[in-house]
Image (cartoon, rainbow, N blue to C red):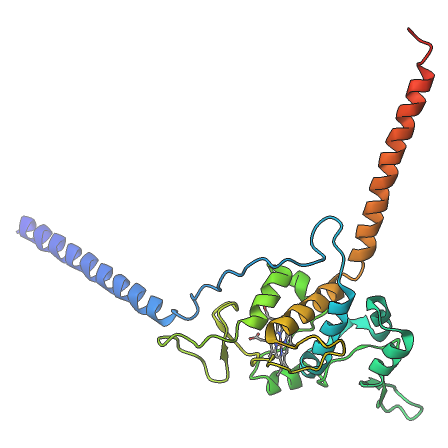
Length: 270
Ligand code: HEC
C-alpha cells in the first residue's frame, strides 16, 4: 500500500514537473513573440568623418551656419536649445547684427510686469533659444505622448554622439519590415531603440534654402544640423584644441631650450 502510494506520488510529481516545464516553455515562446518589437536591436551606425574629430580637429563654420538654418527652419518647431543664447551664435561666424536679426525671429516669455502679468516679447541677444511649447505637458500632448528633448546636450547625451544623430536623421528612408507592428502615431526608424520613434520624419529634400548655394539634400541637412548640435553641446572644443596645439609647440620649444642650456652648462666638463 505504502509502496503504491509512493509510486503514484512519484508519478504525480513528475507529471506536475512536466506540466510546469510545458507552461514555462509556452510562456517564453509567447512573450518573446509579443516583445519582438521591443527586442528589435537598434541598428549599428557607421562612423562619419567629422572635421572636429581628432586631437586638433575644429568645427567647420560654413557647416555650423547651415546647420543653424536647418535647426531654425525644421527642428525649432519642436525642440528648444536652452543652453545656447542668441549671443553665442556670434561664435559660429554670424555677425552681431545677424545674431540680433535671428533673435528677432523668436518670441520669449518675460515678466512679471508692473501688474504682475507675464508677457511675450521679441527675443534679444541675451535670451536662450526657447521651447515652442508653453510647458512639457503641452509638448507631450502635441507629440503623441513623447517629449521632444532639448537639443543643447543631445550629442553628448547619446551613445555614439554625432554618428548616432546623423544615422537617426537619415534613418527614415526605409519602410518597416512586413512583420513589424508599428504602434499608431509612431514612425519606423531602425536606428532608434525599438525601431519606432514618436518624431515624424523631419527632413525632406530642399526643406531649407541654404544661403551659400549648397544643395539641401536630406543627407547634407542631417550632416549640417548634427555638426551644429555637436557645437551646441561643446562650444569650447575649438578653443581647447587650439590651446592644446599651442601648449604642445611651447613644450617642444622648451625642450629644445633645455637641451641647449644643458649642453652649455656641461661643455667644459670632460
Ligand atoms: C514635429 C516635431 C518634431 C520635429 C520637427 C523634430 N523633432 Fe526631434 N523629436 C520629436 C519627438 C516627439 C521626439 C521624442 C521621440 C521619442 O521619444 O520617441 C524627438 C526626439 C529627437 C531626438 C532624440 C532621439 C533619442 O535618441 O532619444 C533627436 C536627436 C531629435 N529629435 C533631433 C531632431 C532634429 C535634429 C530635428 C530637426 C532636423 C528634429 N528632431 C525635428 C519631435 C520632433
